[in-house]
Amino acid sequence: MSFGKGTAAFLDTSIQIARVVHDAGVKARIKERTAPYNLLVTSGIVKQEYKRRLLEEVQWCLNQLNDPKKPKTFEALFRHVTDFLPPQQERKRNICTQICHTVLSVSGRGDMTERARRHFRTLLRTGMALFELGVGYVVPDCGCACANHPIIEEKPYQRYDFGPTQCTKCADRCAVGDFLTNQGELLNEIRAKLDALPTSLKLKADKKPTELGKFAEFLTAYLDRGVDPVEMNPCLTVGDLLIALESRNIPHFYTMNGKESQFFCRWLGQTLIVRRRFPAHEDIVCKASDEAWPSFS
Amino acid sequence: MSYAVTGSEGTSTAEAKSMGPLIVFNAGNNEASPTYRFLDYQRRDFTAAPAVERMRPDTQSKYAKKADQKAKLRRDVARRKIIRATTEAEGMIAAAESEEPTRVNNLTYKLRDTLQDLWEMRHDREEDWSDILNALQIVLERDEVGGFSVPQCKAIRDVIVDHLTLMSVDGVDLEECIVVLALSGLDPFEGASPTGADESTIDDEVDP
Image (cartoon, rainbow over all chains, first blue to last red; front, top):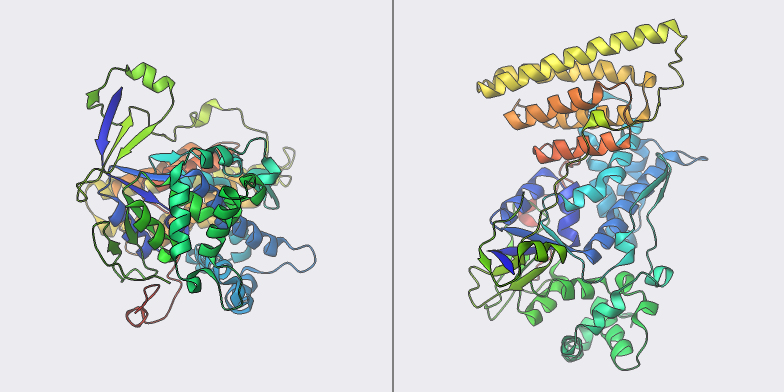
């Protein structure tokens, strides 16, 4: 068997999105961080999240410009995104703001609404190619059917088929169940560590589960009650858990969101690198061998 | 582009390739130099079929009927503009090769104006052609000091010559253009900074 050798880093969804639509400063920082690695790795679940979180928002922006009753101008769309999206939709607002900012450089050339429509369509057409550009390997272990469905342009500038977003809708092609079966004792170990976390990290003030709480509930249902994982739509509901499992053999994990990753990386013996939102800020490197890490929220 | 094979453990490369890409990671104990091992496999290259060999739909704009003499004239004007754009892009390459940033900058302004003239004529062409032109204009607007490198100037020239000059283009041309531009470091989706806040006062994500 022939082998090559080198250093590798795993890029999670936030980094993959930032590599496409963030500003030049953040992109340069990510490039600088990833350049020394011989191999950049990402995964099928990351691809699925990238489609759902970035490209579906691009479709939403396009729909706002195309609305048959009240078509927005680009300026109105931008104002709507920045001023009127509610705080509960913070992620949507952040991503849509980034998407709108990608059009602004041609603002002096006029026809902004038309340019924005064309630009959004271009991003929808090329988004999946850009996802893999510069990445050496996409871990296929989960066999995520949602991720593998291509984006089909049914009607240019208007209708795009992103494929299913729920495992139950493509159960015959979804291999997440097999993937979890192959994890062996690791799932029990992660569940035990999740159980040992303080309740405040697993329950919000309104008693609804946090992301970590959802992971614990999912593992309990799967391991103790034998619930078919596909029925729980894991790539939609516990994506970060699956991404952690997919990345487990890659020594460095690069993300812009350390909130959940700080636990998984620690448990899986990975070095966590957190890219902060502002280009002037340095990455936070939490080495696997360090005893104490900063806390991310 | 492929990784070099550095060792052998009994299975031939051909056999390994037939198994598909498979990576075996080994973090080892040396954190400073985490290692992985992987079977020899081809990295993905974005090499679509050459533009001229693919069948494209006849998608001339509804505004450009063949019998329309004015449309013919407009197409001739557009053809001349594209030739001019090609010349300007070639000039940018020569200026970048001879390390003359001022000339690159001046030619960039000229090319922007030429492309803007083409943008005004976009209704004579199919939507994909206009999308390619829009993407090219966006990357050209990014640069304010004429700092395009030789590979970037070549990518700009290639998009003009290989795609904008064609009688008909399709969505695959659009994808190829974006990849050609991105590979040269020209980024059509680069956003302006989303915040006007004083960055030094904001401690994002990390708990105090």
